[in-house]
Length: 128
Image 1 (cartoon, rainbow, N blue to C red):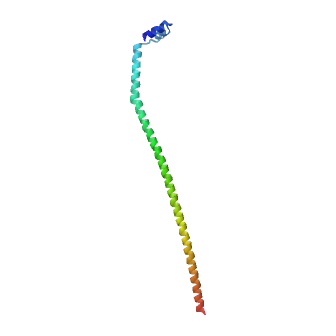
Image 2 (spheres, rainbow, N blue to C red):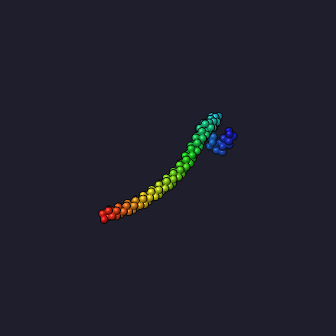
């Protein structure tokens, strides 16, 4: 590296002037690079990777929640269809029972009318 600095110094001395002005210490620079690399490695190993694991777990939970929500929505639609079908059957059954009641009431009314006519005829016969 010193040869690079010397080469640059020979081309105009700009790099050498910067090194002299700012006091570049190559051993300190190298130790800071090693220190930075060590910190970057430790952060990657003990901070970044666990965060990625947590994010993946959250992604899986969210996907499961969305899947469960769609299943619940489908079950809700099926339950609504079933309840509509039950209500439809109950309505038709109620309509059938009302119709049977009307027929029975009409039949009863006709029988009572016939009975009243018969009683009226008997009263007329007794009166004669």
